[in-house]
Image (cartoon, rainbow, N blue to C red; front, side, top):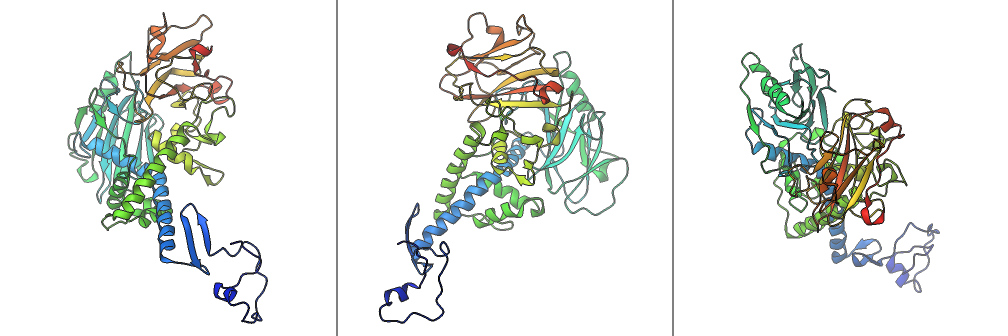
Length: 499
């Protein structure tokens, strides 16, 4: 049925030969009315002058519920990710009194989103009640706190207010209005649960100094116990299996629900909470989807999963690239915006893809800071734009004068887990700190990725696995100006047989 310029009720059209034209009928502009019977991707829909019959209404509501669930998956991935981190940490001991340390570095046995193999990872779960909590931090670390909604709270360490000397931070719980004593770096959080992450540095190839500093200085305790703080328990997680990765199936909605039930809603976007409420995730109420909704949640999770995988590996938004139109190297923070807000607009797709792929939110990861912190470039694809294949051998050239005051590295990741690629190597990585890496005569480096090393290239090779794809992050520690002004850039990852 075509949409005409004149719209009359269905019954009036049927009886147009016997009923006079109403005096007040006017010409209706095109595009305002819709046909009663239309074919859509939902199937045939039947309406009586704008009101659906029962089967059509059911189809429309199924679509609407799918939309809410699909959007809840995309925007709620960050929430599920933080829930998985919390559960992974608490496997090692209670909140507040347990610190998980990777005393011999994190390796490929740990399921942790895009961790590196060089930093000394350490973290705790901070659980607040009604009173402020004190965190005493060690010197010379890169640390920050993210809340249970995966929002930034505060930095500490080298890029924090303690300026790398270590200090005492006072974390105020949601809605706190009591006294705030002097002598602390004060931060307020909107959630009771919070992730505390800090990364130390190796010194002469060992983690001893960083680990010792944490064991001597790091504490979490209620303000009321400041005169007699409890002891911390330090657990070494190196070489152990742990899982901090959120679900990618319909169970992701259970993870999101756990956070909704645990936290004040004031810390999250009401629009996202609206999508969650529409599919039955409401604070103070049980989340018990019926059979129809379970089918919709399964379909939405499947659609959300392929969406974030597509956006992270083959983004269409050119702002996602370091060198648009010229390279496959990507940036996780277009425009240096750690909130993914540019010119008043949130880059929702990129934000969802980031939280699928990586973890940790702090301005320090995104802003230009010459000679401090780190910068990142990542890719799933080779110079031709094809997915990186573990059965093939690739080369990448790192030009001379790498703009890294400290060091640079490549780390390889599993496309499915986004954790370190599990091969024969404990650490699937290579970089300038590796003593046996060979430098070319012109000062550049050739790095190889493949199932076996090319002849004579063992020292510059990282193993991959046939039958598996992979991706890599190129990291610069202490990035210099030539990285930011792009007068220096890494080479593309190129198939050996195409050189």
